[in-house]
Amino acid sequence: MTGTATGHLAVRLAETACVNGPFELPDGRVLDSYFDEYQMAADPHLLHDIAATMATLIPSDVEVLAGIELGGVPLVVTLSAVTGLPAAFLRRLPKRYGSKRQVEGPAVEGQRVALVDDVVRSGEQMLAMARMLRVAGAPVSDALCVLERPLGGRLLLDEHGITLRPLLTEADLLAGTSRAAS
Image 1 (cartoon, rainbow, N blue to C red):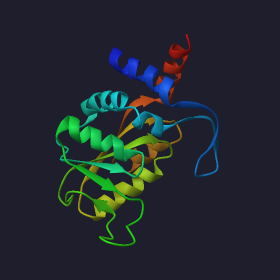
Image 2 (image 1 turned 90 degrees about the vertical axis):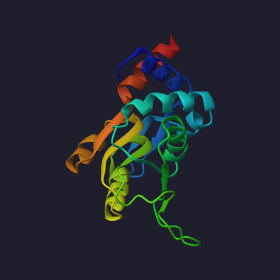
Image 3 (image 1 turned 135 degrees about the horizontal axis):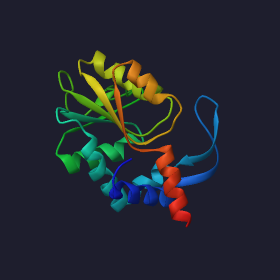
Image 4 (image 1 turned 135 degrees about the vertical axis):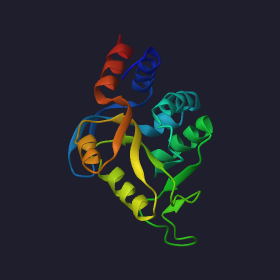
């Protein structure tokens, strides 16, 4: 993390969205604390400030931002509003009725897409979405998130040609928690 503005965001996020207590991950691992993205998304001022800061992480050649359901959706909408880049919305599974789409929003074929999500842990979900977009003809080489937890995600994404660009790492958030408590 760099910059005073990002340090202030770490404190605000720690105060708003850090919850102590056991939290079970999809793979069965249990964390001592977790990041409640819904608390972050529910605060319009914080969400805007996060998006404005995250906008600096977007490579200049990105043409579409793609938010992963559910945590990436408020972020991608706000990032789209801040940057003027179109937003696409990614479902984990294709819709079972209506359009039956997995990608909603603008056409992504041939467009350079950056993935957007709230937290990256193992990187499995980001990788699955990148693969789906690549099959749809969209080059994906960047992923943005608010928080990177050190559970192997960066390494997995890197092995598949995807650069992870987090706003904060878990260490940054822990430092923000310490500053918020003082």
